[in-house]
Image (tube, rainbow, N blue to C red; front, side):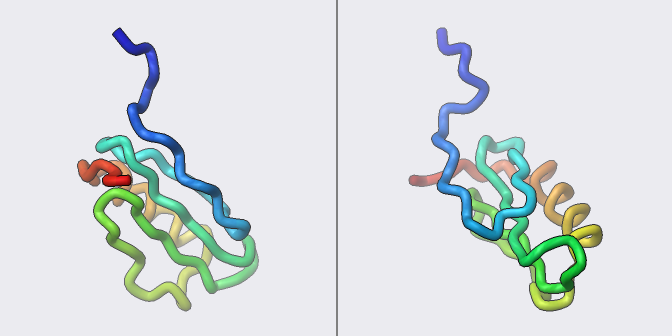
Length: 80
């Protein structure tokens, strides 16, 4: 029996990665962007391939909640 928390390998981390969430399906949701004071952030799910709708209008404090909500609902598993 495996004691690993996930059967999947964590994907490479982008250089502009701000936050990474683990989905309930075992995949990851990445929040990327230039940093805290910018409004140019986006989230991308490695499982279902969904992404933020308006990536050029999201501050980190706003998109964090949206990405976390997606991660808490997404059951897709990574295919690679």
